[in-house]
Length: 352
Image (cartoon, rainbow, N blue to C red; front, side, top):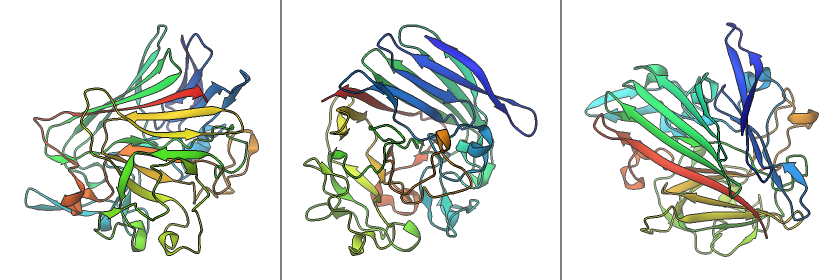
């Protein structure tokens, strides 16, 4: 089932709509057309109690003015690009820079700050199709990029996010969703006791400005080895030089190389207190792991007036690597006119 309401109006008068997707087991997802943000996500615990497990805001102004990307769709190229510069087909491009002299999550006005056109599709597994056309030159990127993101609430208590894009000129494209998860409920405190497993054997060490050093390092013997499930906070020692730049987990992890026809299971998050478990299935090459180290803006309290607090959520952003355009060994973020950008991430919830 799917329903909608007006969530607010932008300063220019355009309406922002909130869509509520529900399945037969009672799971619900609320998504707004501003930034395509997942605002609420209610799932049951071991006792059948439903709680909202994502961070978000109660009003549109907070989504407009906050810089935390809560629940939002990110593009045209997620994560950081060094000094906002890259060369493509022999031409150098300069993007808008919005964080420490670098371009972050699409620039000053990325996809998270755009109004998306919506087409809902009702049914037992309701879908919300969101569309945005990024014009040639927006934020400095070449080419017109046409994007469709489909949220689908599955019968087995999973939220599927399918990303599709095409361009009329060679450009960069790396899309993701920036939801902040806390399986105990968004207001249940720190995320550190949650158990995390990630099918990743390599990571990108950061340098100044949160940018990668260029090295692809093994997770062996580091705090970034989650191949055996462990509490998020167990190795999160801020005196460790591994966190000197980031102040916590804010690192790209490469999934192990694996070929399969189905979407592989790549990570799982478990809250022992509630019994909720979330599994991530994706065909992306890795994910940015972020422990909400900068969730501290007092001007925009979270839902219910909850203060923003470092460490009360975890982001698992399935995407292509950070600054890959300037580090070709990381992988490809270039999209050509004759190609489709076509990736999926599924977040499935259960009780364990």
